[in-house]
Image (cartoon, rainbow, N blue to C red; front, side, top):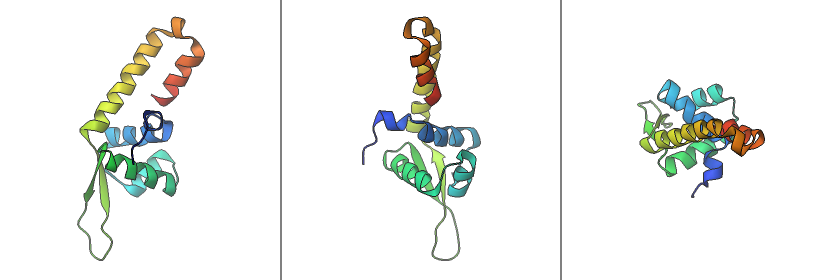
Length: 110
C-alpha cells in the first residue's frame, strides 16, 4: 500500500509523527491517548507508516500470545517532519504572495 503525499501530511498522520518525535517510542494506546484518535484510525495510520518505513514497530517482551509493539520514529519519518516544517516556514515567509487562505491550509498540516 503506497500512501499519497496528501494523506501523509494530513493532520492525523502528522499528529502521530509529531507525538513520536516529541515523546520518543510509544505503544499503541499511548499514541491513541496522545493524539485523541480512535483505534481504527491509529491502526490504519501505523500500518501504513510501518509499511512505508516512516515508523518502526519493535516487539516488546511479554508473556502470553499477544506481542505488544512499541512504535519508533524512523529516519524517513523525521525527514517528512522536516519537510513539513520547512514548508510551513516558507509559507509564513511568503504569506503576502500566497495569500492568507492558502498559507492557513499549509499551516494546519504542519
